[in-house]
Image: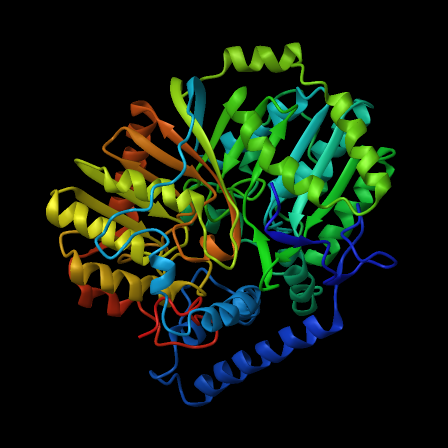
Length: 578
């Protein structure tokens, strides 16, 4: 199959090569840095103007209002500005492609008579084992246990690296080097999205020596239920001892310095046994950057941990994340996403030969220890039917995950629950939900992060505008947004992404329900037919809904959360223009 992407596009300075070389520290181009600095200067001027005007109420909340959990507002504004820059190129392209309006994109999914364009058929693997991972400490323990049982290969795919997180430091600086030194036949492959690395390099300019970190342990425990280093007590007894890097008291390391440490740690591990590559590609038609948002940890091609976590759940989403542990056929299908993207980033004949050699060495056999772990695992379900769907976003807006979810939403009979870490309600989804709630009487509940808990403002305006439109045409839909309650800490970041339909069918993975997934972000998703998993997810939904949200019963209720508009919350493309 031909790739919709132009690969090996030079965006960073890799020295003598124009491609994403192994174990090379990518530095953003000067033009990119200047673009970032100019954008941040504009945002900072607006912030200072708001301050001089004694906190003018006309200034957008993205500039003026941050919940108490954010201690360093200026650094936060840097982060938000860079997140907007990541999608700016795509946004400009889409405004040009849809000059007459976004209706032509909607018609790719649903026609004027509300008839869906059917997705290609899927084959579900039957009677599969799966385990739901919703707790940070349990997730890290599970990851370490299976990585330590690896025989030939550990593959890690992440969109972001969080230098301030002690669990991320432990995995990359303690666990993986220990394993590759202990087993000369073990190969470590880490694939990171290059856009986020470029962003991290620029952020390092603003935090040298005073790197923002997570809250102190006691404060974090009050807000999330777990202190940052609590995972250490839960590690398997034979796991390598955490170094000083894994201690929560260690501060002041910039993202740039952290990536340097990761590469320096990989260097002495021998040959090509510990490799880091960067996903870097552009849409082959319009030439805007494509981001890889798919995540996962894959062991020997036999075990996969995949979902919303970037390597592991963050401190702020410690009890509010969602990942799946799977094995066998389904693990292999999820691992295929990694293999496709990893091999795409080969930059010369030597890496091609090296990748072929690694495939031969891996062999596809399962180690006795790995087999024993799987037999003794406390599975959520042992009889799930699972299909894996991978999206390949492009300038035409084709999203295979969205197509399959629309199909199941459209056939719902009793209830729909949607919870997304980030998102909005695309027009095809709004029309299907309107029909389900108004014509078939399906109970529809939707949960999103508001600015009270979200770590991003870039999608907040699109989210609230789309919710207003939905509630106007489908007033029986119940929308829940996070909100700080009286005398309570701010709500945690609810990063889990899932859909549950009729208490039987679920979608779990890295996919966010928003238009960005169709044009800008690569995802992979597990579609699961299993009542036990659906029940667990419904219980999670109800618990988080009751603890952290308020219900919006009318479209006017959205206005209290909707930002007035600024560069930081500029909409993605023309889809939710007033």
